[in-house]
Length: 188
Image (tube, rainbow, N blue to C red; front, side):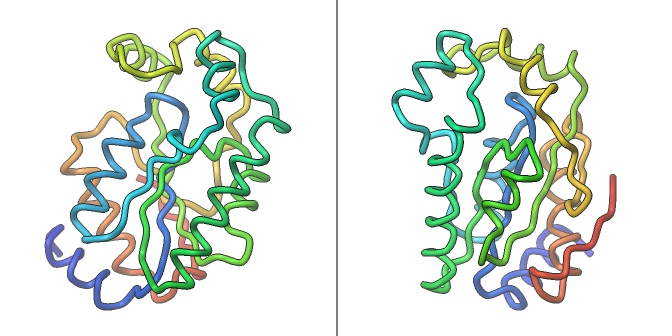
């Protein structure tokens, strides 16, 4: 099945699902999330843009967020997902979703599929050092990997792959899902 065929299959079968593209900072969430939303014709939300000014300022200073810092942000994202689903609007959203408890908040009451972009520290660090327009510096990378609890209920994709290949893998996987609540666990 080509990426285009998979995209058409997903559009026909999944009415108001949400795909959360997750991973540490620099894993490619925004790039993949934007491409996926475009391929599906779904709404896109950049989760990082929903952080409070206080959280952004804290991360800009190189201070990792605590669970307490993240809690209102995660609830806000969950509520946005719920709103989209209530309106029948499928959504692709990016969120680091580093811990199982964070993913549980996002999924609470929602039909959510998780796509985990896994990358090694060298790859991620190189990406972070090459971007100048993001508040999250490479000095925060260690805290991201320390907090990461790799998901068991997600499609895991190698973040080092080409965007087109990653997109094709995700589209094919989503097309095979009968209902968003049935979460297969393939790893690529």
